[in-house]
Length: 307
Image 1 (tube, rainbow, N blue to C red):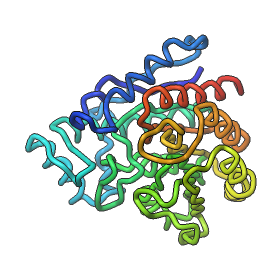
Image 2 (tube, rainbow, N blue to C red):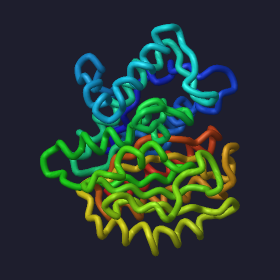
Image 3 (spheres, rainbow, N blue to C red):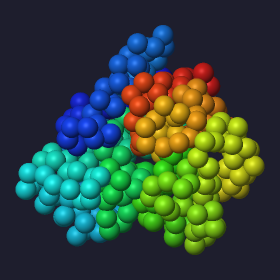
Image 4 (cartoon, rainbow, N blue to C red):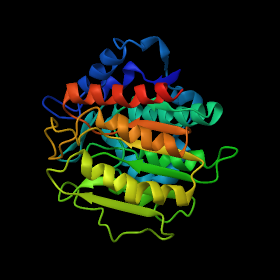
């Protein structure tokens, strides 16, 4: 069984008409997962309510309290924008906290079972820096989950692999000075947000950025996995791996220019499983609904095959 942590509440983060980060992203994935031949092997789980888990202190530890208060204030006032790309609706603050809770639940499942889990939540998080959100992201889910994982028994090193087509500037900003967290990103360059140079190594040689040229396909990704990512992560020896699972490097995606196919994410998952079965996958980007859903299916199917 693979736990899928999901709630319909995530549909109520209202980004407005025509915004690419829309609720239909989740409904497309849910529909696809409920119709696969192995649907009975999925364990659908609701995230722990915010009132029960109280993720706010951890969020305030990772993000500036002033920034967290700003997100809450915009939501309380009825909504607004952090920047031109990043809307906040009246319910977005509460839903963003619930998304954090879902990622923390995912860590709990992975630690308890030693097997993968998938967090199907929004808003995404890897562009949210410690003092500001941007790029559709409010709170830095993956970075928060990494810090939380280090509090769990038996977890002393956590790696984050970010295969979203955009560099996770927020994640790197938050973890690059932490010796027990490694961050590795493959991302199109040049592309939004314009960060993630290969020369950036982190304070403890714990950052690996791999810029990918527009027009690249799976062969370039395979080479990066074989020659850079696998050696980097194997040397770090993580007790748990978090995957910022963005699926916007698909050829069908409207926001980038990489030519992956949905089944390629199954290959990436195979590489991850060679390192450890303690893997938390959490949704980031991916804006072509069909390609997004098929990519999530390919990811989870490989986890089941390994079981």
